Image 1 (cartoon, helix red, strand yellow):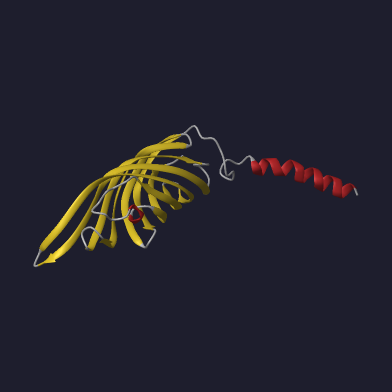
Image 2 (cartoon, helix red, strand yellow):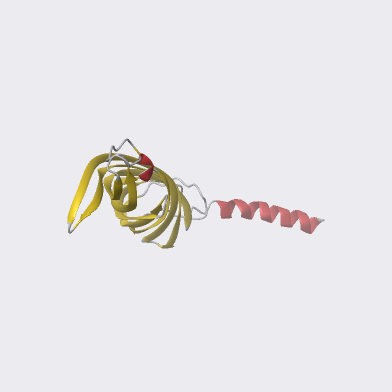
Length: 193
């Protein structure tokens, strides 16, 4: 019985020591600053590949910065144009987010991007003659991800989110082409902690 009490007391003492290690906590407040930049690849609802880059300044657990990316959204039919148009978009803007623990080997990331850009619809009429339409767009993309730290200067982020685009009005092509679920990953280099 005496051994069990001593073992229980040692466990109670050891547990808080392990839990106070800042690199092991899922949520840990940080007072450090830094920054990062890198590439991002994601797949838009419907299978379209989105490629781009992003970078931000880190203050504590929060970060704010910019991004830019382009996407080929495939062929979509326009009833008013009575033909298929190859649709592309390019967007850039600001992003803001929160790392649950910048020092941890695995942490959570909550992020929102607000982008401004252009959508293009292009149809071939034959012999290098094209019918083309352009429209401005505004896009909102909230997402959540898991951040993995293989090295102190490198982070790999795996995320999922949703693209919401305001009314584009691009030759009668549905806004659903621009809206939808996204999944992807990013590789960031920088000073995180």
